[in-house]
Image 1 (cartoon, rainbow, N blue to C red):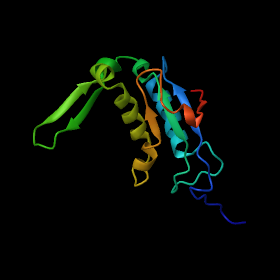
Image 2 (cartoon, helix red, strand yellow; image 1 turned 120 degrees about the vertical axis):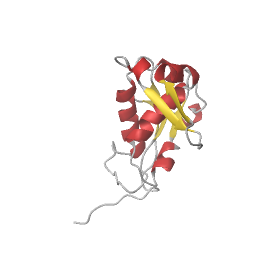
Image 3 (cartoon, rainbow, N blue to C red; image 1 turned 45 degrees about the vertical axis):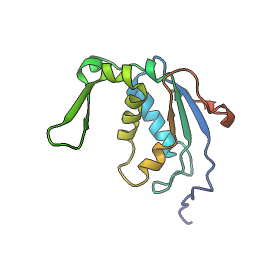
Amino acid sequence: MKTYLAKPKEVPAKWWVVDAQGKVLGRVATRIADTLRGKNKPAFTPHTDTGDFVVVVNAEKIRLTGKKLDQKIYYRSTGYVGHLKSTPARKMLKQKPEDVLRLAVKGMLPKNKLRPYILKKLKIYAGPEHPHSAQKPEPMSV
């Protein structure tokens, strides 16, 4: 018996919608990362993008446990020496709620050449509305 290796065109991509309101950041991010990668499918192949599309709504209402709102800090570099910028999670949730979830999911994906293509399948919106109703996304339980 031969090992089955899926090709991207053989595995159809579904669309899922996740309501992040009141959900814990890490638990939502792990479920999204697995779905984006295609680990929930029997035809999962590690070196091929066989994942589904995920639309996340209400990203601004996601929950962080413990003291993470004040203690978790996001860092970014401007490219200049000594210009490392830091932003606490509380401020990041107010200014860019989409980036909080995107960075959490990005850290859970494999660090290889597939990661940018997998991340393109993630659509995050701060409010309850999204423009992807034509794709008929199914609700995903988290």
